[in-house]
Length: 485
Ligand code: GLY
Ligand code: MN
Image 1 (cartoon, rainbow, N blue to C red):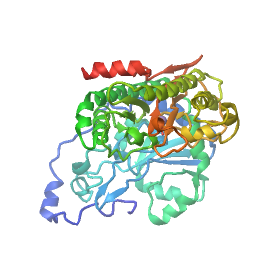
Image 2 (tube, rainbow, N blue to C red; image 1 turned 45 degrees about the horizontal axis):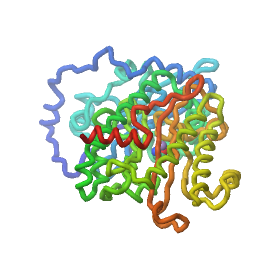
Image 3 (cartoon, helix red, strand yellow; image 1 turned 90 degrees about the vertical axis):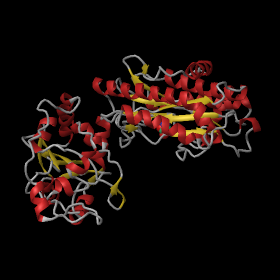
Image 4 (tube, helix red, strand yellow; image 1 turned 90 degrees about the horizontal axis):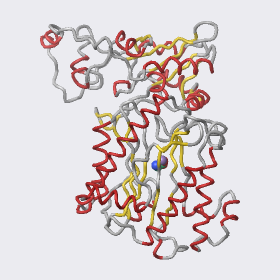
């Protein structure tokens, strides 16, 4: 790949273009500007965010790429989703953002000037026919993209052609930081130079700046949750069909993903639809199993809005419509753990507190059942307590533009940090009782249960954003029964 569009992205099977056709294609197109009033959603938020980033790195050039297209095969690329830091700083979210780069250029005594480096709409004449021939960037292949002036109007940020970027990335001054973990659009030689300055500190600061959500972001997250609730209802309504299908898990994935794609950009992560013992695999995304009507279904799924905010919700449902006594006993323990975790959420609490509260309930429950053969207190006191064999992972995580949001934050801001008003997170304890676990009584083997909700920290506690979905066992049974009648 070269910086300038020297070569068109055409397929070997594309028919040659005659000079006569090329000349004809260059003429007689009416102007079609973007409506002048268009702005990125939430556009008034972005200057403040860039100013906070700028303040953290005075005098340094900051390079925040949207990321690159990834080839799936031949001329077929995977769908593109821009890096969340780029989205957070620009509000630009579309698939046409591939290769684009935001640069914060040192300007003035302390500040920065933001400049977007873009691949603009190709001209109808003098552009080598890119608009109708190029499979990656051509308007007639993948749709209209803004020109430089339009991009500047949409975002309030000056826009330049991507071709100017290489000079910046190879210049010795000013000191330049390139966001780690995402490649800028550069040729092979520059790419090596850029890789050497990939910067973890920039990634950490950007993640930490995103930890507390503003009111507009919380509104977007609530929208993601609301669409996810609808998707869960769709799945319950589709259960009779899914139960008849030899790969019922796939059917469920398809039903949820249809809702996600119809209402938003798609899913926030690959849908987990796990029947029976598949639910003991934390991220079961093969989803190729049949649904056993006597078992539980673990559905872990979320809608991502068009603005790229994520929901992440899990429910564990009895496929028969009613929990058996053993299923209910296990379900109620996870529910009690989740409730204890939720009750521990408040500003000023340590991030680890809700996990500790949930784990205390799990360990005590397992000890009561005789599964955990040491006292709960002893298991909890040890770093790798034995109860963790049955519950495996942490009890939640931050949620935002990414479903595992702000993951590059340093421990003192996140894992070892303190909750603040405006943080959004999930609480998702689980029990994963493996089907081949000889420490378990037979009736418990193969049960996998997770309950996951999305919450925003308020001034005195936390608000349950996903409260429209039932959590308690009997409420789940009546909700299912209503949807299925
Ligand atoms: N909801 C699954 C996860 O957070 O990994
Ligand atoms: Mn989660």
